Length: 308
Image 1 (cartoon, rainbow, N blue to C red):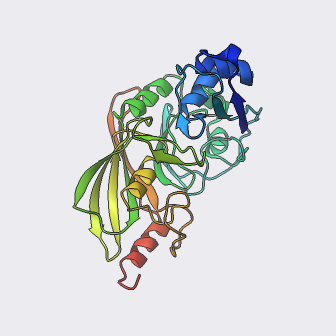
Image 2 (tube, helix red, strand yellow):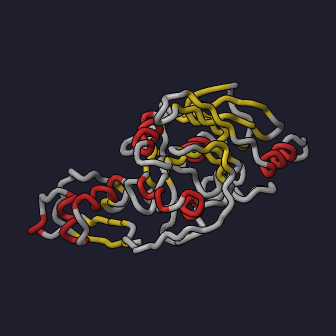
C-alpha cells in the first residue's frame, strides 16, 4: 500500500487534484483518478475530495493507493462447489473464507487459482484484468454463497453488464443483532471509504455514492432477526455497513459488529442465497440457490434460544 502526505506549494496552487497527485506520486492520471474515486485522497484533517478539486497553497493532501505487484497466477487444485456450468458460464457456491482473486496478502489459494485449474488458460479470454479472469462480481472473503463466473470472451461483458445494471438479482440472508423495526423496509445511505480506517466503509451523506438495500424479516428471535436483503446497488460491504448504521450489525462481523459474538462461525453471518439472471448467450432466464451453510444454521439454532 502506497501512502504519502503532500503539501501544496505556491507554484502548484490552482492545479486540479488529479494532475497534482500525478506529478507528485509518479502514477498515471488514470491510476490517480481510480484511487481518488476509491476514497484515497483526503484533505487534512478528514475531508474526502474529488479529481476536479483545485488544490490551494498549504493544503495537506493524504493520498493512499495500492502499489502494483507482479503476480503469477498458478492453477491450484482447490475444490469448488459448482451449481451449474456450461461453455460460457459457471455458477458456484463460494465457501466462507475463500478470497476471490490474488492480491496483496493473498497471492494464491484464491477462487481464481481454483478456476484456472478447473477451466484451463482459456479462462483468461474472459477478463479485463489478468488478475481477475472470469470475475464479473465479488463476495467478501467471509461471505459465502452463490456467484456467477464468466468462462468465455462473449459471456464476460454480458454478465458484467447484468451485474452492473442490477438486471441480475442477488438476494442475501443474514443474522443480525436485535429485532428489526417492522417486517420490511428500505435503507438509503450513501457509502464511501472511511477516512479513519482504509479497510472500512462508512455512511457519508455528502461525499458517498448512493447505496440502497431492501430488507425483509424472515424470522424474529428473542434478541436477533433473520433477514433477507436485496441489493438495489452493489457497494463494497453495503449490507454490513447499512445494518450496522441502523443499529443491527450482522452477527460476528469483525469490522462493523459490536463485539466478538459467541457464535460458531468464522466471519460475518451473511450468505448470498439466490441469484437470478439471463444466460449471456441464449438469454434464458435462470434461477440459482446456494443452500444456507451448516455454520449459519447452527447460529440460527443458537439465536433462537431465550438465554442468549
